[in-house]
Image 1: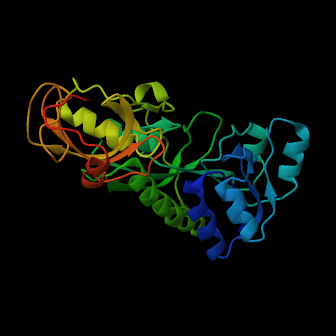
Image 2: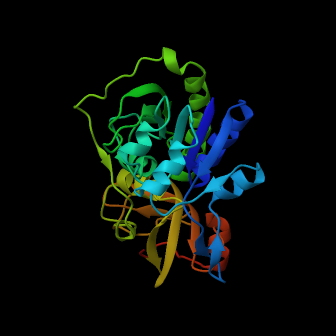
Length: 301
């Protein structure tokens, strides 16, 4: 097929690779514009931009798709379909209607659960047993379109958003290739009205750990916010990111350090911290962290 690809972050890159490897003609790649990054604040192309350039594909990064000029340029590509995954712009109806077979979105949840911006984070933070990938026919509403294909996967007991992100990206790449290979034979499944939840964008204000909460909730927050924005607490007056954890045995005053393995008491139960990062430092396991930053048993986080 002749495909327009629309995506921006790392999550989208394996999908672009899979489409190219499957032999589809990539008419153009749309992504977000380069943004200032790094110490020098120089414009840096997005991961999809960089990968598309390496593949020798045409890259477009309009600030908006609302103007007639951009919409005409999109329609002029005469695509069979557009594949959209974490693109970052609202697609006007004119754009949705331009490809012959419409626009297909790869969404990282089992719709209608977790429509919206942060479905991977929210699934872990909510304690969902499973999540997955849906290939959805796009329409004007937020992730409301009919689903063409879906695939579920269990969420591991110690899995972080970073780990689940990579698994779902690979799943999405395989599933969209499958969907395109038999697109005209697939039956769209209208999403039910029941079971709808929204994955609101993660706010930095929700990243601070409240040790008075149950251990299961604290553990899910640590894993769900890893690596970004990163759950955090103060240890000996310093802000420390908590990037991995597991449920552990133990009890005590909320925030109390229970042993030399960084098992921390919560409102009920306890968690063991498995990966920590001080400001300006690399992430470390507990043993390495404690060598450079002792946290005595009995102290409070």
